[in-house]
Image (cartoon, rainbow, N blue to C red; front, side, top):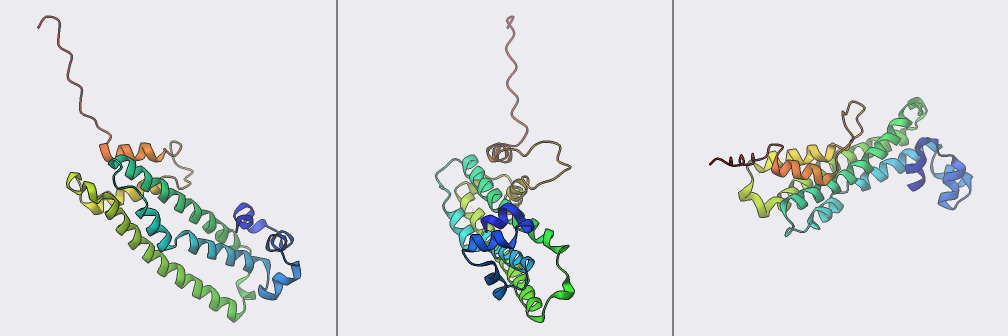
Length: 201
Protein backbone atom coordinates (compact mmCIF):
# COMPACT_ATOMS: atom_id res chain seq x y z
CA UNK A 1 0.00 0.00 0.00
CA UNK A 2 2.72 2.59 0.80
CA UNK A 3 4.37 1.85 -2.56
CA UNK A 4 1.14 2.23 -4.55
CA UNK A 5 0.24 5.31 -2.49
CA UNK A 6 3.55 6.90 -3.47
CA UNK A 7 3.69 5.88 -7.14
CA UNK A 8 0.14 5.07 -8.12
CA UNK A 9 -0.42 3.16 -11.35
CA UNK A 10 3.14 3.94 -12.50
CA UNK A 11 4.61 1.44 -10.02
CA UNK A 12 6.38 -1.47 -11.74
CA UNK A 13 5.74 -5.16 -11.18
CA UNK A 14 9.37 -5.53 -10.10
CA UNK A 15 8.83 -2.92 -7.37
CA UNK A 16 5.57 -4.57 -6.30
CA UNK A 17 7.21 -7.98 -6.08
CA UNK A 18 10.12 -6.58 -4.08
CA UNK A 19 7.73 -4.86 -1.66
CA UNK A 20 5.76 -8.10 -1.25
CA UNK A 21 8.94 -10.14 -0.81
CA UNK A 22 8.10 -12.54 -3.66
CA UNK A 23 9.35 -13.28 -7.16
CA UNK A 24 7.78 -11.18 -9.91
CA UNK A 25 6.17 -14.25 -11.50
CA UNK A 26 4.45 -15.11 -8.22
CA UNK A 27 2.28 -12.00 -8.52
CA UNK A 28 0.72 -13.31 -11.71
CA UNK A 29 -0.34 -16.57 -10.13
CA UNK A 30 -2.89 -14.52 -8.22
CA UNK A 31 -3.48 -11.44 -10.42
CA UNK A 32 -3.84 -11.50 -14.21
CA UNK A 33 -1.91 -8.24 -14.65
CA UNK A 34 -0.36 -5.31 -12.82
CA UNK A 35 -3.39 -3.03 -13.19
CA UNK A 36 -5.65 -5.60 -11.51
CA UNK A 37 -3.21 -5.87 -8.61
CA UNK A 38 -2.89 -2.09 -8.23
CA UNK A 39 -6.69 -1.74 -8.38
CA UNK A 40 -7.12 -4.36 -5.68
CA UNK A 41 -4.60 -2.55 -3.47
CA UNK A 42 -6.35 0.81 -4.01
CA UNK A 43 -9.84 -0.53 -3.30
CA UNK A 44 -8.67 -2.40 -0.19
CA UNK A 45 -6.95 0.77 1.05
CA UNK A 46 -10.06 2.85 0.27
CA UNK A 47 -12.18 0.43 2.31
CA UNK A 48 -9.71 0.73 5.21
CA UNK A 49 -9.66 4.54 5.00
CA UNK A 50 -13.45 4.67 5.41
CA UNK A 51 -13.80 1.82 7.90
CA UNK A 52 -16.78 2.78 10.13
CA UNK A 53 -15.29 1.20 13.28
CA UNK A 54 -12.08 3.22 12.89
CA UNK A 55 -14.01 6.45 12.33
CA UNK A 56 -16.25 5.72 15.35
CA UNK A 57 -13.21 5.16 17.55
CA UNK A 58 -11.50 8.26 16.12
CA UNK A 59 -14.46 10.53 16.90
CA UNK A 60 -15.06 8.92 20.30
CA UNK A 61 -11.45 9.73 21.19
CA UNK A 62 -12.08 13.48 21.06
CA UNK A 63 -12.01 14.85 24.60
CA UNK A 64 -15.52 16.11 25.40
CA UNK A 65 -14.12 18.40 28.11
CA UNK A 66 -12.26 20.53 25.55
CA UNK A 67 -13.72 23.93 24.66
CA UNK A 68 -16.12 23.71 21.72
CA UNK A 69 -13.73 25.39 19.25
CA UNK A 70 -10.99 22.88 20.06
CA UNK A 71 -13.41 19.96 19.75
CA UNK A 72 -14.63 21.18 16.35
CA UNK A 73 -11.01 21.72 15.22
CA UNK A 74 -10.19 18.12 16.21
CA UNK A 75 -13.22 16.84 14.27
CA UNK A 76 -12.20 18.83 11.18
CA UNK A 77 -8.56 17.77 11.44
CA UNK A 78 -9.40 14.06 11.75
CA UNK A 79 -12.01 14.25 9.01
CA UNK A 80 -9.57 15.93 6.65
CA UNK A 81 -7.01 13.19 7.34
CA UNK A 82 -9.54 10.50 6.42
CA UNK A 83 -10.66 12.43 3.34
CA UNK A 84 -7.08 12.89 2.09
CA UNK A 85 -6.44 9.15 2.40
CA UNK A 86 -9.61 8.35 0.47
CA UNK A 87 -8.83 10.96 -2.20
CA UNK A 88 -5.37 9.45 -2.75
CA UNK A 89 -6.83 6.00 -3.46
CA UNK A 90 -9.66 7.35 -5.62
CA UNK A 91 -7.02 9.13 -7.72
CA UNK A 92 -5.18 5.82 -8.21
CA UNK A 93 -8.42 4.12 -9.30
CA UNK A 94 -9.20 6.95 -11.73
CA UNK A 95 -5.73 6.74 -13.26
CA UNK A 96 -6.27 3.01 -13.81
CA UNK A 97 -9.58 3.57 -15.56
CA UNK A 98 -7.95 4.68 -18.82
CA UNK A 99 -5.35 1.91 -18.71
CA UNK A 100 -7.60 -1.10 -18.26
CA UNK A 101 -9.28 -2.67 -21.27
CA UNK A 102 -12.70 -3.71 -20.02
CA UNK A 103 -12.92 -6.32 -22.78
CA UNK A 104 -9.90 -8.16 -21.37
CA UNK A 105 -11.54 -8.79 -17.99
CA UNK A 106 -12.60 -12.33 -17.19
CA UNK A 107 -16.07 -13.07 -15.76
CA UNK A 108 -14.36 -13.63 -12.39
CA UNK A 109 -12.74 -10.17 -12.63
CA UNK A 110 -16.12 -8.57 -13.43
CA UNK A 111 -17.73 -10.36 -10.50
CA UNK A 112 -14.95 -9.19 -8.18
CA UNK A 113 -15.39 -5.59 -9.37
CA UNK A 114 -19.16 -5.74 -8.74
CA UNK A 115 -18.56 -7.20 -5.29
CA UNK A 116 -16.07 -4.47 -4.36
CA UNK A 117 -18.34 -1.70 -5.66
CA UNK A 118 -21.20 -3.06 -3.57
CA UNK A 119 -18.95 -3.17 -0.50
CA UNK A 120 -17.81 0.42 -1.10
CA UNK A 121 -21.38 1.71 -1.49
CA UNK A 122 -22.59 -0.15 1.61
CA UNK A 123 -19.62 0.97 3.66
CA UNK A 124 -20.05 4.58 2.52
CA UNK A 125 -23.59 4.63 3.91
CA UNK A 126 -22.46 3.09 7.20
CA UNK A 127 -19.58 5.56 7.37
CA UNK A 128 -21.92 8.54 6.98
CA UNK A 129 -24.15 7.21 9.76
CA UNK A 130 -21.14 6.77 12.06
CA UNK A 131 -19.95 10.32 11.31
CA UNK A 132 -23.41 11.74 12.12
CA UNK A 133 -23.47 9.75 15.37
CA UNK A 134 -19.92 10.86 16.27
CA UNK A 135 -20.65 14.53 15.55
CA UNK A 136 -23.77 14.41 17.71
CA UNK A 137 -21.79 12.93 20.60
CA UNK A 138 -18.91 15.38 20.19
CA UNK A 139 -21.25 18.40 20.16
CA UNK A 140 -23.55 17.06 22.92
CA UNK A 141 -21.97 19.06 25.79
CA UNK A 142 -22.92 22.29 23.96
CA UNK A 143 -26.28 21.41 22.40
CA UNK A 144 -28.05 24.05 24.47
CA UNK A 145 -25.65 26.72 23.14
CA UNK A 146 -26.06 25.94 19.43
CA UNK A 147 -27.81 28.66 17.46
CA UNK A 148 -28.61 26.27 14.61
CA UNK A 149 -30.10 22.76 14.57
CA UNK A 150 -27.62 19.93 15.06
CA UNK A 151 -27.97 18.73 11.45
CA UNK A 152 -27.04 22.21 10.20
CA UNK A 153 -23.98 22.28 12.50
CA UNK A 154 -22.96 18.82 11.22
CA UNK A 155 -23.36 19.95 7.59
CA UNK A 156 -21.18 23.02 8.21
CA UNK A 157 -18.49 20.86 9.83
CA UNK A 158 -18.63 18.45 6.87
CA UNK A 159 -18.14 21.42 4.52
CA UNK A 160 -15.12 22.51 6.55
CA UNK A 161 -13.67 18.99 6.28
CA UNK A 162 -14.16 19.06 2.49
CA UNK A 163 -12.38 22.44 2.35
CA UNK A 164 -9.02 20.66 1.97
CA UNK A 165 -10.16 18.80 -1.15
CA UNK A 166 -7.97 19.85 -4.10
CA UNK A 167 -9.72 22.55 -6.13
CA UNK A 168 -7.98 24.51 -8.92
CA UNK A 169 -10.62 27.26 -8.60
CA UNK A 170 -9.98 27.93 -4.90
CA UNK A 171 -9.16 31.60 -4.28
CA UNK A 172 -6.86 31.00 -1.32
CA UNK A 173 -4.77 28.23 0.19
CA UNK A 174 -6.66 25.77 2.46
CA UNK A 175 -7.15 27.12 5.96
CA UNK A 176 -5.94 25.35 9.12
CA UNK A 177 -8.56 23.35 11.06
CA UNK A 178 -8.28 25.74 14.04
CA UNK A 179 -9.14 28.77 11.87
CA UNK A 180 -12.12 27.00 10.30
CA UNK A 181 -13.36 25.84 13.71
CA UNK A 182 -13.11 29.34 15.17
CA UNK A 183 -15.06 30.81 12.22
CA UNK A 184 -17.70 28.06 12.50
CA UNK A 185 -18.23 28.48 16.22
CA UNK A 186 -17.95 32.27 16.47
CA UNK A 187 -19.03 33.33 12.97
CA UNK A 188 -17.32 35.92 10.80
CA UNK A 189 -19.03 38.94 12.34
CA UNK A 190 -17.88 40.04 15.75
CA UNK A 191 -19.52 42.23 18.34
CA UNK A 192 -18.48 45.83 17.64
CA UNK A 193 -16.19 47.32 20.23
CA UNK A 194 -17.80 50.21 22.16
CA UNK A 195 -16.85 53.63 20.82
CA UNK A 196 -14.21 55.35 22.98
CA UNK A 197 -15.58 58.10 25.20
CA UNK A 198 -14.73 61.63 24.15
CA UNK A 199 -12.55 63.73 26.41
CA UNK A 200 -15.31 66.31 26.68
CA UNK A 201 -17.80 63.98 28.37
